[in-house]
Image (cartoon, rainbow, N blue to C red; front, top):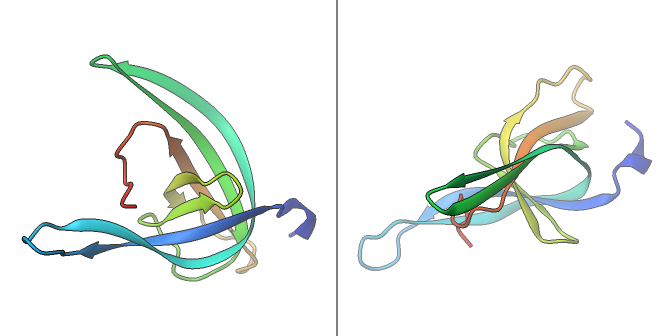
Length: 115
């Protein structure tokens, strides 16, 4: 892996359920770790459903290999504060040197947000 490609500072966040008073369940995210990564936008699409515009960009994010990253996690770009939902961590054929995450950036409000 070439270290020069890893020029974006990213945080990997994992969800957890929090039960404040009243029995309501809220989804909060906690930071697993912060690392350097490469963010490549592959394609984008924009849809209109019931007078609501929803856009998403398919993105590939490459980081150094770390255990514990799965499809329930999300990635936060530190510089732009952009959120990417992980669709799948791709199989690792490099012998645990790098981790490639297939992600989607959505602009529709409320998708897996949990601030």
